[in-house]
Image 1 (cartoon, helix red, strand yellow):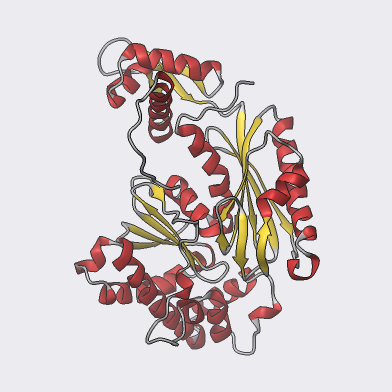
Image 2 (cartoon, one colour; image 1 turned 45 degrees about the horizontal axis):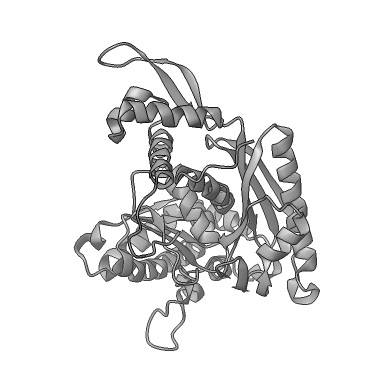
Length: 401
């Protein structure tokens, strides 16, 4: 998401109504079932406006009445809640070894979570086979959602690396992709003109999911750090995902930890180098899925293995140095270690916190807290689906069925 400046324009009735619809939807998204009176009291909208807005949203099957709610003053009111029966959104996550598809309904409840083995090999196939596999899984997920009687709001694909505006993957070293117009190719393969298809960076979408589902909803300044493919960050500032001029934010793995020519954060704190140090003789490049190796490192650490503990300590220290650079730049409230980092967080965080505090200019690391994600390895797919709910929550309602 990007905040842009423009010359002030007169607001027409449509603009005002969309803004007010967004206020109502966001209130219910944040606070759960509420009466019309409670919505009016919390948002500052008058009761007549709330009644009109919620009537429209009920007719469009975005809200539903759930029964009576007790008010502290006056008669009980009818509670309203988000309606998950009519609309859903899909997120797909592409990694070197697997595809993940996840769908949520408009209320935010998960409808499906599928994993499929994947071998893109676009360097030799021109990405055609990879796109076909992604499109096939997307089509299956969309078909399942429609069979349940729901309209698909949209589909967003999460990819590690540089994803430009318009959905072209400029560079994804983990996938071997360069200048792949994934959005255009997918749209052509799916042949569904009405389907909103988007492509975005893996870590950025994971940050969107973390903000809503990670148990940190009150935080407006949050950074999600991914170790699934190199080291990337999704940065949320004032509740909005930091996008950059072309969409290329978050590539913190390129931070040099030292003088020019020094090893980078990715070299010293990436998951592959960690596995290599913790498991002597093991070649992580022989695997496309690092999860079993990460589990092995965790098991060794739990047993007190000196080599694994030393490797985790070194990685945590280097990670903390990189996070300090990030904290000095954007001063987040919370840094969330995701995917493989989360699985190793109990050993990484102590060393990382010490370096973060030591290398951040502001006292006490500027108030930043470091924690582990609870969303597992599919956070980016969840964020891809959530991004379409967020669009509706801005007042951009789907076409009436």
